[in-house]
Image (tube, rainbow, N blue to C red; front, side, top):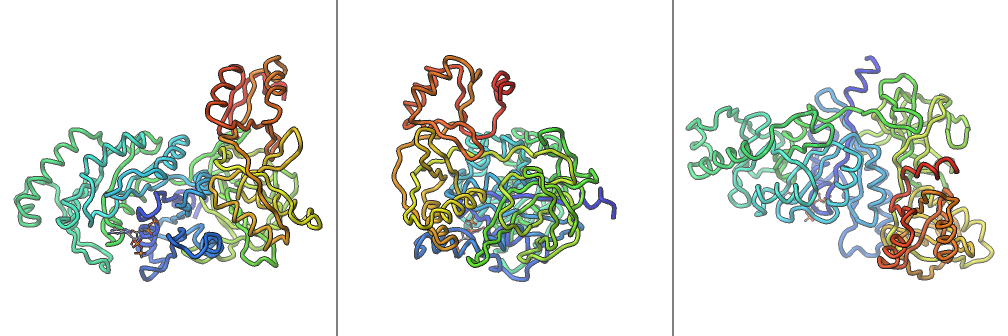
Length: 538
Ligand code: G4P
């Protein structure tokens, strides 16, 4: 098969949701359709169970599971589908944000009763920033929930999307009768039997056909006809181009647990979802079908065995083919590297592969060479953009608790930061180290892992920071910038890349600082277009 055809058959996507909306259940049902697993219950949920014995023990348990579920690949109707796992727990949101840099599209799962929840809002915002094509799946229709129109409105309002339903529910909860598939023009009747994998599909071109009454009764028929008329009037026709550029989002309804509406979702997904897309690097736009290999590291996973400190770096292949035992350039450190046992992922297994194509993910064994965001190429000096760090929400000083082990501590912190567990800042004034995390849980994780994997001990001290902002002066040589650095000296730090960061201790301070120094920009994300003057003088 030609390179072009191999690439066109790949669909790499992520499923995102607020915890409990049904992401794990949906993933499992998709794998069942792909024949990648034989029975329900095979995919372990990697979420943090409520009331878990101890948070970090739970995290340790999950680190095991989440290597296995990082990429779930299967074949369906001639397509190679790669599902990238995204942790639902909000403390791991940054992990999810980074994974979203490696997907070509997403499916958002929403609970019909709960509607749009907090975590969904954050994740969809990141997708919108990157114009990632989104399909919405409204789940749990077997339960009482919000009215379909109310939900569609809520999705538009809270998520800032423009939706168009491609399927429509007939009743819900106790009265749930099935789904009218607007995309394929047929009806699936709900039997509530989750063991039945393939639902009975009844072609139904014309809803005025009196057969409808026989199928679902006269009251439901009347409601369905009325509501579908409203759908046609209110929502735009589906256009694939609009979906692909991120300006229109199709919506499906179903019940993942009952395996209902999932096949429709998958069949439409393979038809409309994008195959690997071109990606911007710092020098040019790279197309997937270029013959030269290139890719970037979007996730690093430490192995479970503390005696072997090797890690698995997950590389998304952006262009060409990745081959085993071939020398590739690690652009950041200028070294050529060969990989004798690259892992590919299939359902829940990983296996060594000789060749992988653009769109695929390979897992490379790493002894500490990689950082998140690193680029690999066949020799071209370019770097992929778009793996920013976000402003952390929690900050603490990290101190050495065992002076004999300071080297181990330093190395441990260094490597955990490369993995993206948290961010490290060094205060300009006194060189003290500050750890910033998205969730409070990570502090426990870091302490535990430093001790168990690196034999180092640390303790934390509180530090009052509201937000860390990346500082971007219009003119780094200006009086104003010099004044800012002098006045705020106590609150300035460098991140790991040496970029200047301002620790604002409250929203008020941040606001005051912004208005006092209008020529300095404060960013909440580490990657931004620098002001022109600053660029030339850097
Ligand atoms: P998540 O990965 O998004 O966090 O959600 P997950 O799939 O684990 O689903 C959360 C809960 O919702 C699970 O119940 C699951 O069985 C249930 N669920 C998923 N899809 C549907 C659906 O279509 N209808 C109904 N009624 N429930 C659904 P749980 O009791 O929390 O867990 P479990 O003990 O069943 O695993």
